Image (cartoon, rainbow, N blue to C red; front, side, top):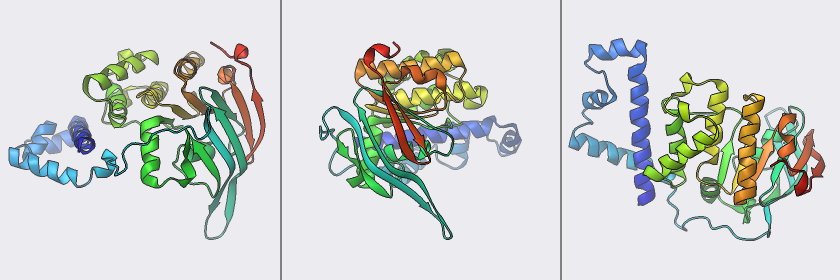
Length: 319
């Protein structure tokens, strides 16, 4: 039951933060004050949820919807197995076809990709080449039309959705082109929420979240809401959120798109160091030539086809 308890606490935390966000909005403040509501807790009181009985009812209500969030699994956690020794990713013959009622579009055509554990793999190519589609498939967020994938020793394309979600939650950090931060949480709380979902709670989660925010240069903005951060700062919070919890694999889609040269290299070097020091595997889709020097392998994707891969010996990588 510990997973469900954690999920309920996270849900309550998000509810309180969302209510606080509402009470800080000027357009809502006047309306709420007319009914005697000025704080998140007074909203709960207004609906009778702050009393012991009301609070228990809210907990009971949340518990009906949090098992999926809690990731309670009948077969336990996903244990990594050495199906492909030394390989973090082994993808073979990946096709992806998007279909509508009138037409179809093949985004990926027979893509084969092998990435060694501890390597930093760069995927480059023009817009529309299929880079984001490939990353979504490798993250388990999109099911390929055809092909096989072994991810961290697991036959990913044969897993059910429940265990695939668990694999991603436990072992993978994902970063999208958009930061997708929770607007009612501060930078630190956004990272803490991600840490909690990976099993790092309380002081341990806060300590790790603060350490990673400091590593991306945001220790002085930890208590600011997303609307108080620049686009580049929001992107760095997203980087920190992907890195928290010591993932075995980081999948990043254009992580430096909103960053200047200094901060772009800073966050990619941080991922590079994780790869070399902790054996974490990193796969990045990018248009940014400034960060290619950190890659162990650079693969080119064009029109859905992986056309070329260049491998660099360790002595040529940037440290």
